[in-house]
Amino acid sequence: MSFLTDKKILLGITGSIAAYKVADWLRALRREGAKVTVVMTESACRFINPLTMAALSGNPVHTGMFAAEAPETIPHINLAREHDLLLIAPASAQTIARLAHGLADNLLATVALASAGPIIVCPAMNSVMFQHPATQANLATIKSYGYLVLDPDNGKMACDEEGPGRLTDWENARQAILSVFAPQDLAGEHILITAGPTREALDPARFLSNPSTGKMGYALAATAKQRGAMVTLISGPTALTVPPGIKCIQVTSATEMHTQVMTCLETATIIVKAAAVADYRPAEPQLHKTKKGPASLALPLIANPDILKELGERRGESSDFPLLIGFAAESHDHLKEGARKLKEKNLDLIVINDLGGTDTGFATDTNRVTLLSRNGTQEDLPLLSKEETAHRIWEAVGRLRVGH
Ligand SMILES: Cc1cc2nc3c(=O)[nH]c(=O)nc-3n(C[C@H](O)[C@H](O)[C@H](O)COP(=O)(O)O)c2cc1C
Image: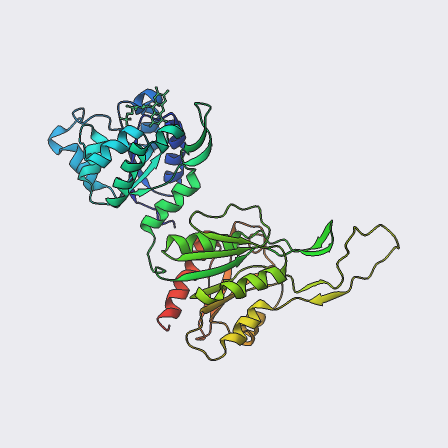
């Protein structure tokens, strides 16, 4: 279940060329279970037909202050009261100016003024318009009212100019929307998360690695941010986009990951080691590409630093060390192996992946894990998306924080 299930979202669309993009946002919101009602300005109706938004939302679209079928219900007040979130996307320079100055000369601006709940504003306009001091001052003003402004992306625009002004992408907006509804139980935490595989060079053209895609670690990073944490992600090579608002340090090898973890350790309050770190590396990486030669070749390996074990040792009996959460990906005896690692590496919680399934572990979008805690609790989670699994891990961390 998503935090968006049954949430009532009022989508305000204004007169920007990017209006067509939010038709897809609306579908994505509904797929996650949100109930969406649309308000469109007069200009927005010139860019996209209200009929499209009515069909996609399954609700009548509100276009004018005095056009309501039941005016006795005072539509702008009802719309403001009945919704959990007002999402204005795309937000034109004109509408942003209205919001900044408290104008109430159309339905959307009036609803915004009458809303006591959260408001997210996603500007989209030509980059010169966006960078104009008037627009920037208006954005600063609405931020001071508590509106969450999602900065536009840089890039080429419909007007052929390049710069900031493109409507932020759906994934950014989705993360911000989820943050509105997620419990803020990780506020004040600084979470250090490792993710992805490491690559151990044999020569300039080859490396030893594993099939980790980083999806679990990135899901942990995104969900921790949604729940209010400050997140530093130390990532091995992946094809994933770093979730918004997260500091990411890219590394390649286990030794680099080790150095970065030890450097970032100081300020962390929770450490989650979700990376699939190579246990060994070639003892003598070659400077030049190895040529094809004999029929067989022995490859001497040496052990990489065991980052988790070292963290557990550093922690010792200390009570003010960050909470330590490890992952164990096992192909057999996974519970027994997980319990051994929990103890040997001095962890608070271990997340055990059974590599045996086709829909769990490496490269999948779903996972089925068991959580073992230092307090002796065992929780077998069902098959869930990696995002939902991540939320369940944070709930378990919350229980650890209060000693359960
Ligand atoms: C083709 C075209 C594209 C436009 N694109 C944008 C845009 O992306 N962003 C913007 O702020 N204004 C844009 N405008 C100008 C707005 O539509 C105009 O300022 C309008 O008054 C906005 O009204 P509203 O905020 O009530 O929707 C565009 C106008 C035209 C004709």
